Image (tube, rainbow, N blue to C red; front, side, top):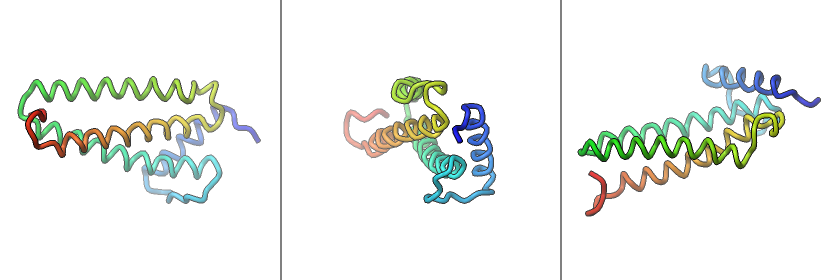
Length: 132
């Protein structure tokens, strides 16, 4: 059975809601849309939590307001880049079929992992030339 985009989105919303509420465990062997959505949401939450914590830690560590403003602007530009890059890579919902929500989420997760590495590098910077 081919899922319509609306049905796939509804399944994804239910899966996300249940995963957030802790009602479903991620089964990495689940190959149905619901099971994949639950696991994708669990991965996204872990990645988002790490990214948010790193960003907050870095903002707190920066002593100069201008550097906090630059980091904020950088993060906002990065968020815009991720949206556009994943749209380019995965297309629109209409073009992507029933698994598009999962595909776009995994694309964003991949980009977030790269950003985590960048922020970890900034946190590790202790030499001259590091933003303060």
